[in-house]
Image 1: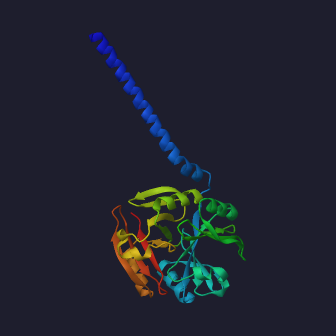
Image 2: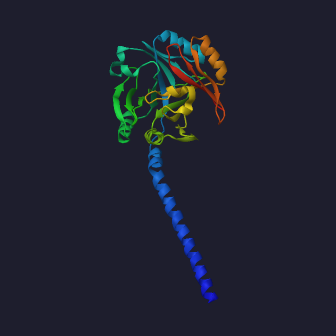
Image 3: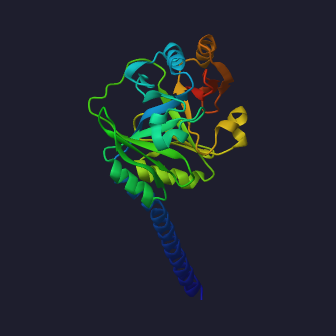
Length: 298
């Protein structure tokens, strides 16, 4: 009798072990299937980074001088009503004239308080095709630029307008400080929007703050996917809205930069605020009324 019980016990243990192995394999397969579309799509796309940010201005000479003096940016190209400034190792910054009729059908996008973010891509038609497949819509088809290259625009599934640029060759970064280091795109659907940009631009997760994934291409500014109208943003909450990317500039000292902002004609929007993960952030408003962020990296 004891032999039978012992044999039954060994059989039960072997059966339990087999069941555990099967369960582990099933869980692994499910996790693999859930991750596969995101990872496979990202791996097949050449990573893209932001190469240009447009800031709209009611007084271009004044605002150009403000950014040159405050952040050490220098003139890269002087187009009529649209100077482009070299901003360190980050993307260039275009100072676009408010109400410029030369913008054509895109003129309504250029408003005080709304930055236009351009991702550099090697093939604009292919990027637009991916955007449509992922639920986006084309706003501006591929359009030649007189000085070389081309641009286009699309809206993502929640309504943010993003631009694409196929730049000309031989772009050279300026050695000056204070480049754009983080761009936050607001959304009511953080998970869905994260997947959209990972699959479209080949981005991958760099840092996971609660409800705020930060993505990277390995170069250029990071892309934060922020919950729109999030109370956790504190005084900056009104800035985090769909259709209004939040641009944060890197600085070694927020307090010093805010003092220079005020001396140059801007104003402080939110003072230096420490981050739990290290470093700090703050916000300022330029003379035209655009509000941008400042970020001290830990």
